[in-house]
Length: 359
View: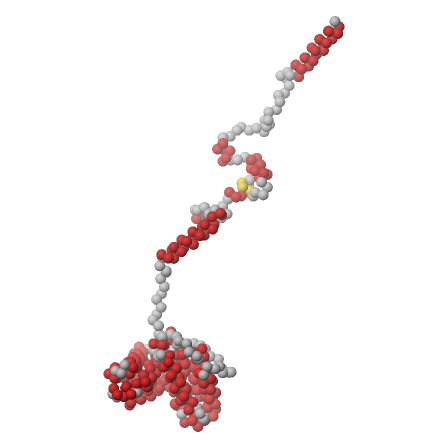
């Protein structure tokens, strides 16, 4: 019995202890995150105003991602001011090639359909800008240079011939300087064209040297002439003077000497050609002399000569050029009436011009 009472007493004590541990006076078990819980906000508010804790958590999850005040850097535009000014969004990076291709295609389409911008119309070509082939053909230019070369060869043979033919040497040298100046501007190519400016300047030096008799002048003329011959033969002299490629005719071809050349050819035509038969029998020489007069008339017509800015002077020059052109055409077509009409116009030009400008 005692043993039974003892067992019952032990069971009662255990039950009491259990009941005491489960009493309502003990603190309740802590709820999860109860110490940091905050009133729950709506989904819209959470997206519009994420908490700093969330931002910090995001930045800690991706350490390589850049942030500005907790906001991911890549939500900003690369060029915010430019984008704002243009009121457009920058194109996606992945579409750069497509955008470039589209731009090029649009540009090509525009170029193919849009007329080019208007440009200024260039002025009509003049002899000084490359139309010399309309004044004198290349063959006639070279033939006239050869003719003068042969004459100078005879007149520069010795000091004696030099002294006797001073004026003829001056006229031929000035004419050669003018023709070489034309050659520097001629549109077609020929063997000595790239050295024509040397021929031009050395011809001018010969004309100056022939102003004085004697051996010193002869030696200067001879030296320059030998260099000219070598160039015309296709060679390159060992010593050449400095020479500008641009031609200023009034600097190298004295107008008075050129007018003497024109006058000499005009006198020959006046005394030699008086009818159809004369024109046909002397056809080649008439064409050559008329072409030379026309070319020299175009030279003295150039704006760098004194009086070239005067309308009256230009009128006389143009009559001379037109008259020589008609004479040349008349000879080429065996038309004496056209030749004579041109000669009368040329002669009128000389008669009207000389009283005003000869001196």
